[in-house]
View 1 (tube, rainbow, N blue to C red):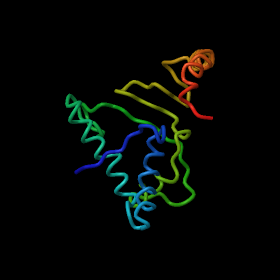
View 2: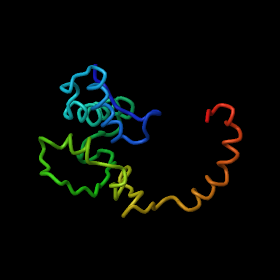
View 3: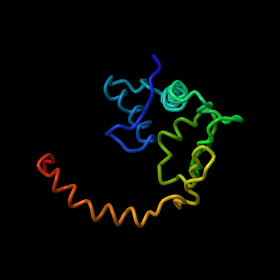
View 4: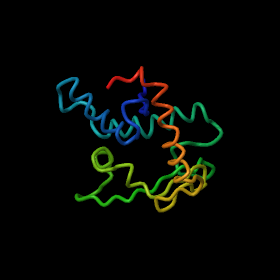
Amino acid sequence: VPVCLGTDGFSSTMWTEWKTAYLLHKVWHRDPRRMNGADVARMAAYNNAALANVFFPEAPIGKIVPGAFADLILVDYHPNTPLTPGNLPWHIVFGFHESMVTMTMVNGRVLMRDRNLLTLDEAEITARARALAPQVWERYKTHVTR
């Protein structure tokens, strides 16, 4: 059964999910050989793409080919050790961080360039969130333990 990775509560970024998947199985089984980086990469990249293709069959997902959805990110990553195809999964698990993303493209449209959002007003969103946060906390304070 192919296993996929996603974010649903424990973390808010896929790279944290990669690291969690890599480490959690080792701790649970008390075996450092469990769940190597290549297995995590397979789950996160290939299995996720295969599942997405089931639900969105109109264009290939997870491939850089003509006609595919052009969903890409550029990452500003300067590793301290050599980066090779053989060790890429471990670089992603332990080296990548969401703050390193410099460009985001969705379906061929650039949404963020040089870490600046092009389609949303971050200052406006932040101001609105700060204004609404007290109301949200008031509604949910009985559900939140301190």
